[in-house]
Length: 133
Image (cartoon, rainbow, N blue to C red; front, side, top):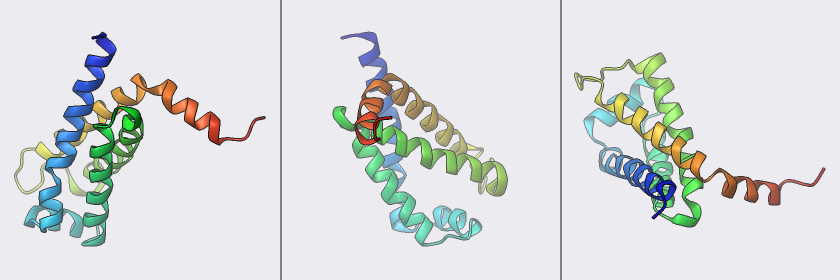
């Protein structure tokens, strides 16, 4: 296997695992998730909506043809999570020692790596959608 393929799969799997393992907390209404989204003023719709987006991103990240779309969704979702931590929530939430913030950063970096490694695929699709100049 090529190094690029190996690195991509490691990043895809790492991001997907993080995104998918948090779904239980969001969809079950775990106290920590309800607390976070209540602070943000978007409980329950923001919690469930972000869970749906993260589910789609996680599945797409594990699909070779569409992993770049999953990476894009993951980047956007994690950018929102990181911004929320830095502006409203803080790094440490309910004494977690910054674990959720760290997971958001790791997922963001993994999704960025996948997007960069599959940039040509993404640009081919974008060029096919946009009108010619």
